[in-house]
View 1 (spheres, rainbow, N blue to C red):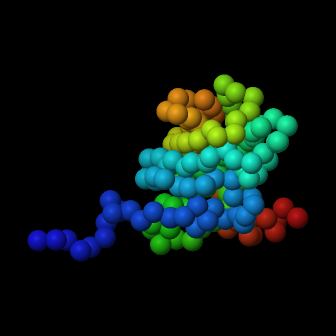
View 2 (cartoon, rainbow, N blue to C red; view 1 turned 60 degrees about the horizontal axis):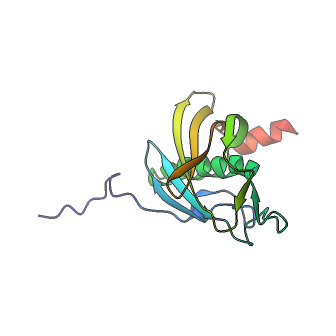
Amino acid sequence: MTNLSTTKQDKKMFTIEQVLPHAHPMILLDTLVHFSEEEATCCHLITPQSLLFDAALQGVPSYVGIEYMAQSIAAYANANELINNRPVEIGFLVSSRKYKCDYPVFALGMALQITVRPLYQDESGLSAFDCVIFNANKEIASARINIFQPENPAEFLAEQQ
């Protein structure tokens, strides 16, 4: 007998545009390849069309890895919101700690795989994530990223003006 009900185990995959509250060209990632309550993985192939691609360097400066991580966190959070029938919301990158990268430039042709894992989230909307960037199954960058996601982002932004 087949169970036709959908469970959280039968997760739907979302396009990167569905889970990032950005518009092109500010979406830096290509795909969300996996998500669960414990982690998410996104990918980006470095091409001449990659935002922030520097022709002189033949790649993207490695400090952009922090934004790849932040967008992967947004993909993680929003995929988990959508799977629970809640709307996509914006969050804010608060800080990064211990960003370490083995390369000064993500070179043309590098296939980056960004994995993010939540460490904690408190009631105020602050959360921390361990983030790692892989290329060819080798860890090439890592950081701890702190995020703030207010309960009502529009109201929070209005209060900041």
